[in-house]
Image (cartoon, rainbow, N blue to C red):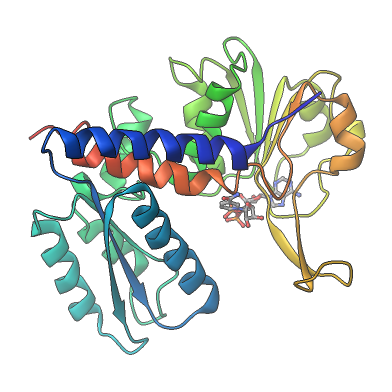
Length: 294
Ligand code: NAD
């Protein structure tokens, strides 16, 4: 059984990107620039955005952070997006979600130019993903693909069961694992809360991607010997055994499932740390105009 180390893989990718930036600078090229927009004072969102900006600085990307109070109007936020769409310094930008209730997430996402949508949430980029065209794949699915690739995990002809059909993880993962390419070429079963025979389906799976948000849901009796298990779940619960007072739980009953697997991602330290690497890879792609040219 091999434990897939997402932290180490993410750090390796970040080092590779940093080396690219050195080359770009030496050749007198434009340094990739990621901008982030943060609305309100939600603690979690602040931490995520701060860490993204700090990582950009560390690897040599340019970065900027634009903050707005909770009370910002939708019109003002949309105007900021127009500015960023037209700012030649900014290669890609993200709007940290969720937004306050009076602002439509969807309207905001659709206002971002698909060319600069490094979060990969714009319907045009999701459509391009479904058509297997060059695109920005959103951070979590992209991170999972990178882990499969870096660990050279065979996917062609395998049966992949995805648990959960959210727009940000389960649905795109099912499309990506079925596409003609690597990682991909799987026979995919997309399961969800209305699926009746989940255990039987999981027992047929060579690869299971669990993304439902229920701690310890995937138990050993649902996994066949030698399966690859990717645990996307993150549930934060109170803990008396950790310094922070919190611990993170995945969707997989790790202790019991791991011994049966050929590969497994732990929580924390599996899929989670890959999201930042994905965002940086997308920003590098954006600065190279790899998706839309121009
Ligand atoms: P969501 O809450 O939007 O959707 C959950 C999905 O699970 C739904 O499609 C639902 O039908 C399905 N589901 C619920 N109960 C089920 C059951 N009993 N059997 C089968 N399917 C069932 O989920 P999400 O936003 O994709 O997040 C899922 C988990 O992944 C959460 O724990 C979230 O925190 C985590 N997550 C982690 C990362 C990361 O970077 N590691 C990124 C995004 C989400």
